[in-house]
Length: 260
Image 1 (cartoon, rainbow, N blue to C red):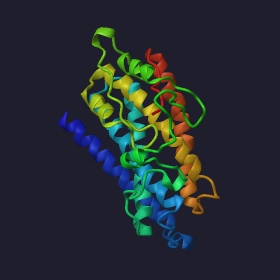
Image 2: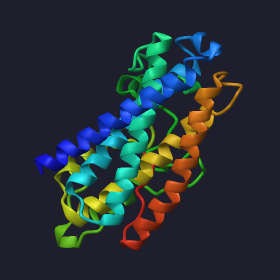
Image 3: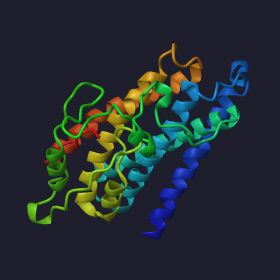
């Protein structure tokens, strides 16, 4: 177990290091890269928030590699861990070069013009992403109610007598991200339960990040072509993975989680 954990950490560090190196090589001779975007720009906000979003995805993938047993799911987790670690490295390189903090000091997704209520702002959650009764997503699909959400958690690939209790509701900082309670539950699982719950959390995680990627590909919002290029690459990759994750969940007799 210790060797497996060390190997996962090593892969993470290598991926982030490669991301930093690639970003440096791509833009070291780019005169436009010297013009740093404003602190409240979409380019800066996207990099900061997507790093945070990706970091949780990397952590979930590492848990699957540690506790999961399905070779197909573990292969998906390894791909996600390496790809998103590389992208984190690139975005950290931008922020360092721009003289901006790696952590967004403002409300998450405020750079997209999301209005925040007092309660949502205090928890770092966009105010307009779903309700307790609707749980809508940015693509217009309804994912069910709070009761259905609990039911999906309770029956995720487990027999009724083995089902875990419903995860307490809590607002995540950005759409699709897992709550602390959900992350704790993922860490506590083993084997097939880890495989299924990882797939469910990662599918929702991918779906929640698409809106930020789409926004960052818009030239009217982001003038830096290299930022738009990375956002577009993320969108293409995760759109493909969403289809694969959805199929893998169905093959294992489970259902997608509702958007939060």
